[in-house]
Amino acid sequence: MPPLTLNFADGSLSLPAATEFATALQQSLQTLQQQITAAQGGDRQSDFEFFDRQGDRSLEVFCNPNLWASPHAAKVLLTVKQAPGLRLRVEVALTQLQEDIQLYLGL
Image (cartoon, rainbow, N blue to C red):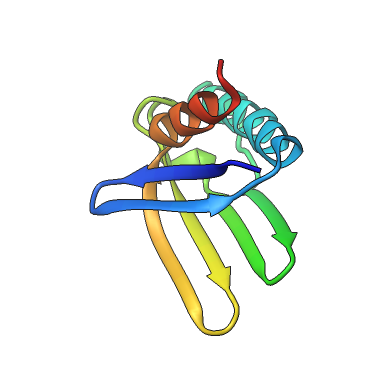
């Protein structure tokens, strides 16, 4: 399985990822975009969370859709944990994360 490269302001991270994982994350981020758009209209939205574990690696994406003026301004908190002892927590632009996944999926 080819690595998924996630880019952020201070660098990038490549991790092994199955196509099913990337597709599920892409669909979840589309739901987040819809939540942010609904929040613009005054409809309060619950926090967005995506979690995936593959072996000793876990990835979590968190966002409060009520904080952002638009999906293009939104950022998510990305946490990657790899045993033993690696933990990366970084804020990533939603659009950048979506672009990285689309590139991985060849869209």
